[in-house]
Image (cartoon, rainbow, N blue to C red; front, side, top):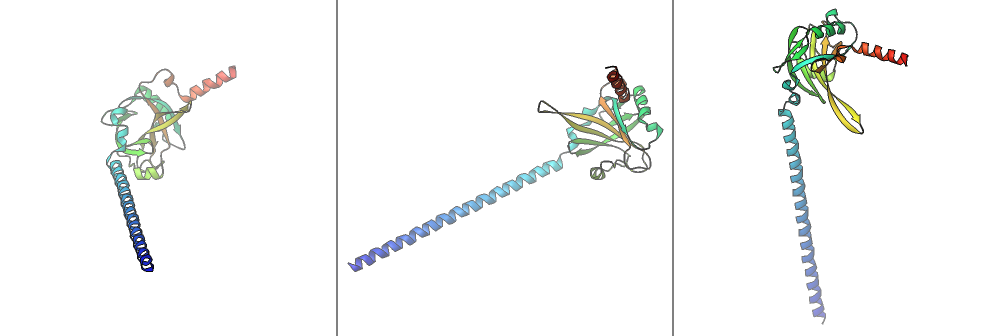
Length: 226
């Protein structure tokens, strides 16, 4: 009887060892699969990131707004100026010049501005904005991104950059993006622009013929009469 009990105990002990071994194998197998799956996932993610970065690197961001899309006549809608600048680049003088000789952009990137022709060069994107420099201005995209005032070298005078700025307007909680076009100007001796001329695509209509100063004056007169 005692011998039988010993035999049964040995059998139970052996079975327990086999069960533990099987459980360990399952655990190891499960861990192995998990590690393999995790490694595969990480690898796929890395590959996707590398593929995405390659795509971003190879594509030209400036293609998002091509010169063909910009081609056509433009009319002045406003301006900003600060500091000292040459008389010929005075916003008032430019406004009169653009009335008599409208600004245009051709499909090959020729900017006709104030009686002269300039070559636009696609520089790429700065955030949502598309940047076109003027050939010969000494424009440097890296310097511009570090300081958005840096637009030319010190020996250059005139239009140095055509910037297509994306603005956002919210109406009833909906976003309505629109593009504003500016020609940036620099004077000789300065790398930074002193101002810009805002323009819009198409021919000017009667309202666009008047400067913002005139419109502000009309608004003031209307307020006084009221």
